[in-house]
Length: 292
Image (tube, rainbow, N blue to C red; front, side, top):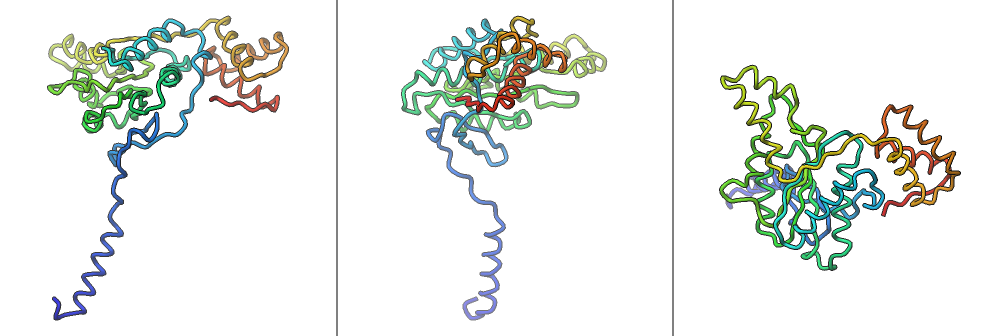
């Protein structure tokens, strides 16, 4: 080859072109880079999140019992004590995902500045559930305690990825890493769609056993927290709490009347409805809202 400079130059150009086409190497995973991360399954990488979009835990109303239970469970985990994976299920807009993020922030608010002694919140998207074993293998060798968070977890007909989640919740032969806990939210109590369960019932030889296998997925979460539709007074308490926190100066009677009208036009009273109303009110009043 050294006797054929033209061939050497051509091969060099080909090698350089292949290097340019190759994807860049994955960045090194550094759990000390932030308090929150997003898991990218395609690159097996944890992307640091400098600022989490959240509300303060004191602003979450109407879910006091769920709040207390999740705080206590998370505090035990942060201290290195036994704790349960948690499933937050129920109606839309009542603060399931907001509570997870708020609890994480509240626990870290009293923790030392040393990242190794603070909880890391890691979001994994529902479509990346099959990559959970890879993520756990990454976290298993870490010393930092990690709270995995999967929002809006559900499975539809024909989706078999729930089986990999069952194995993870049970721990498999390796067991769940001691430094990892899973919190998931779902609009469905049993995570699986009713259609999916009924299909199994109609096609299985032993219908009861098939349904039991499906429903048992949610049973693998040690802590169940239900979120239900709020009444009018709870909804108005949310509105008044937000208004006071953000300094929105509106006469109480006007605030209540407008908030009720807003809920009627949307056909629901929930924390999300209250939040959307407060954003609209702040915009009309020309008031900035800072969440953190």
